[in-house]
Amino acid sequence: MSESTVQFDRKILTATLSLLGLGLVMVASASVTIADSSTGQPLYFFIRQLVFAVIGIMAAWVVISTRLSVWQRMAPQLLMGGVFLLVLILIPGVGREVNGSARWLPLGPVNVQVAELIKLFAVLYIADFLQRHHGQLHNSFLKVMAPLMLLGVAALLLLMQPDMGSIVVIMATVLAMLFLGGARLDVFGALISVFAGLFALLVWIAPYRLQRLQSFMDPWADPFGSGFQLTQALIAFGRGDWFGVGLGSSMQKLFYLPEAHTDFLYSIVAEELGLLGASAVLILFCILIWRALAIGRAAELSGQIFGAQVAYGIGIWLGIQACVNIGVNMGALPTKGLTLPLMSYGGSSLVIACVAIALLLRVDMETRQPEKAAARVRR
Image 1 (cartoon, rainbow, N blue to C red):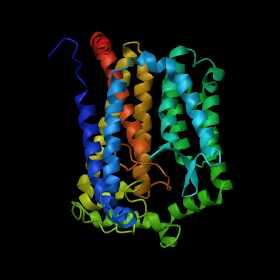
Image 2 (image 1 turned 180 degrees about the vertical axis):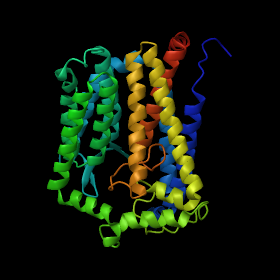
Image 3 (image 1 turned 60 degrees about the horizontal axis):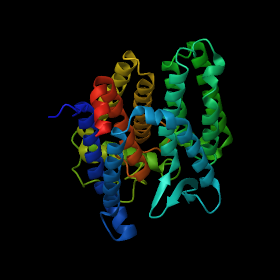
Image 4 (image 1 turned 30 degrees about the vertical axis):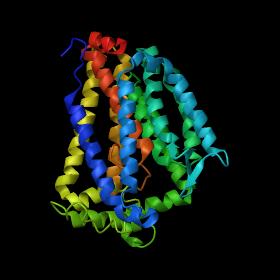
């Protein structure tokens, strides 16, 4: 092994590849019926997901080979570019609308979900801000509010799509990063109160959001109407028992559970692989999040503030999104259109998740072996 060879974090690689591989298998299983019915090709969604996985791995390799300083320099421009794409989506005839939401930007044979890009760009932007203003947030309320202005514009544009789930993930991640970056506890608490109030207001003024909340509280009150998706997900969990009904043997994917291969893939995991398989997914995500936070802490101790905040942000973001998706599937949270990272069908989500993991590995490389990481870039 040459001197410039860099050792990757094996725990992150194992957890990521396990989730990615299991996700491909479960997408194939969960989508086979609807794919055959809608396209005549039983493996249509699996093949597309496999192609996206390959693209994601290729993009991850490029990211691993790029210095963190490059991402730090580009962070503000990336976020502004993402905001511009959000504006494009809302222009009639440009963005693509699916199920009443204009969230996709068509680029030839694929549709890009810009919200996934914004999640990554927001983490990079806040990490850059915290690097430039390190040690200044504790005594200045304006310093804490400053980075939220551009993100507020992005949140408003996401709300117009509408995409409430992505707003929750982005803002929760940003608030956690600001707190870890030195924001005072009273300022942090005030921001949480403001965002909670805005969230409650948005739920109250939008009838469909209020209906989702009501159906979440008692899905069995209308099991064939507003509570249909949640009740079918709960039935899937009930059928799974300890060891599941067997891979490919799900009944709920036979047009009972809507979005079985996307937002509700975890329910099919629980049905076919049982509590054992569902718990294994949870453990893999816990390993991934634990290693992300550990890498962030190591980078912080070595004085690499940008890398530390990137690692913290990615760990918090993936953790929150996984918890929300799993919570929705289990009936613990109201329904949100959020995918399960690395597993649910969706090209944008899968590629961006791979890029995020690559950034984690890059932070770890520059923290543990800065000379070897630099040598790898020069090769």
